[in-house]
Image 1 (cartoon, rainbow, N blue to C red):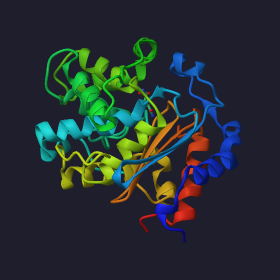
Image 2 (spheres, rainbow, N blue to C red; image 1 turned 90 degrees about the vertical axis):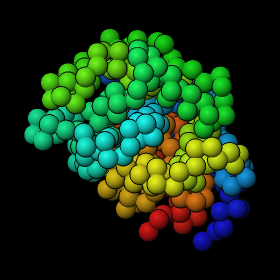
Image 3 (cartoon, rainbow, N blue to C red; image 1 turned 90 degrees about the horizontal axis):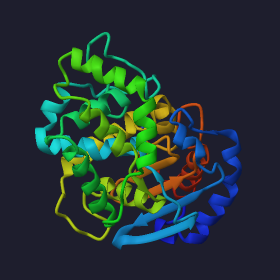
Length: 308
Ligand code: GLN
């Protein structure tokens, strides 16, 4: 198997070209109407390795919304503020056979299954301290820190679109309020919609993957958030639920902590080594990027990157 230091833009480019047409097997998410406007043919592939080495191919400047990938950032902040025990007193560490927007286990145990599915993620964001927009701004700031890009913003059209159609998420929010897990008002749900609307590139996703792969140390070596246990917690959740009901099969084929979003991005952590970011908006039936998955799979096979 090849040495990872030999991964080049040429390597990524040939993998990208091989998998480019997988977008035809997926469909751009349109349950959030504004997302339906994305170009199904857009595709990008990035790797960030040791010493901040960045490799980018495809539509490298194309921005898209991070969607569910924001859940790992929110989890980090909530656990830093409240402590792991307090956060996981309100939700489970469970893997899942259910889609990302499923209500389980709100009607049985009363608590979300994990912080990676929508219910647990909405709850996680509500646990971040501060009035109004403050918790969202903390999430935005941490994304800007990890990517070292202060210009990152959220897409207000995507936010408005999800806010006005996200009734299922609103239903979960109120069920959790009924269950005594959430005490605040709908500003807290708006913060979740805003975090999902943060816009970035595949390279930014690779930097996020790198951060969690390397004990919460940034790609340029900045260690102000270094935290071995927090990185293990986030990576373990990514591994067991980051790809929703596909996570088990994905652990078998890719075998790396990963988090997908319905904007078409996937961020991957290769522990101790590197971060991978992919973007291609056509999604498979589980809500994961179709071409994105296949690009990751090829790189993992070629360089024997699976944990197992
Ligand atoms: N904003 C999306 C939602 O809540 C996030 C889902 C996802 O990316 N899987 O439906």
